[in-house]
Length: 511
Image (cartoon, rainbow, N blue to C red; front, side, top):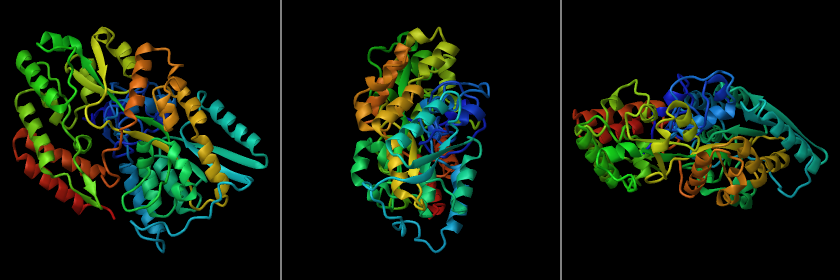
């Protein structure tokens, strides 16, 4: 299940992405947030749902001085992603880049131009490396050391590091791309990379060095692999997913065994109905309406060959189950309200018995609900865990492609990713080796519950993936949500809701 709307709670009013896949590093500074928590994947903040990046456990804005990564983390943890795709920003980016791509290969074709790359060539010259809102007291020393170490290993090279603020980043990337000034190596999420790819602005890293892509986790590589295109267009850099968090006190109070927490959807539905009956509707277990990412997490094929396909019999059964749960008061009425902030807020208030959140969720509990903390249990996600991704891409127009490729690989190699997430606690590295050896980065986490959660998240990296396709826009998300809400209220059937939703999405797909 994704907790799509939580990100709204953590990053008030900030909407940058439209799908579960990114975290906005700079949001900590411009968007007040204090810890790493992701609740859903609808797409507003890079980290939270950053798509609505995840599972948001915060209720309001934090001081504007919060560090960028802290903000991202929080969002990420609560993303139930939100994750995390560029929806609002992506639309603008797509429009401008479409115009700039005139004369190039059309959408769906392989990029027609890419500088020749020789991974074994002698490195020399200079390139520009751009990050997203990571220049601050916490991370600046890391990047200065990173650049200095690379230049020392490769005499005669110069890496010019620049960092852009979180606010307006999509517009900045758009301006750089259309002006032919995209940095050689750039930190962008999968959604931005997808739009740049359609204008032939990012390098095919698999074509450049196929062997290198094998060092990263599959879900991270898949995030930068796009329908209709061959190749890989980004290296996963720092990632997130989320976990289930349960109020065991509520389970005991309403006749359920806290030692037998749900591990399947059927168990979740059954226990939700039991809790609703025993509590007379006062303690819902489920407090989020299903979204496209939830259908994908349960194996529904939501998009294929440029078309949305989520109106299947399986999807109808899933939505119908929610119709029944809502009718039996196993879900709170707020889930269908436009201003609903999400399940993490209700969970912290003790009003629902289940939420999703990242490794940093215990931090939120200690701060906002310390009395609840002893009664909270953690389990891994039901179905396919959502994936939130920030990555490193290389400009297809780089005048020094050999150096750009080498530095992109250096930034994202195992050792440097481990060092980075030691600072950005709550995030996960994008390399296979680090996720298989979690102590390499979790050993520095002082909070035992957060450390345990981070280890569990690393285990989920084996199967985590982005559930919502890049073509899924904010407008589509809103319309699909409206149709599902209508079905849950009993105004239309589950089948009609999904048929209408699929038709709308396919009528509005941007080629």
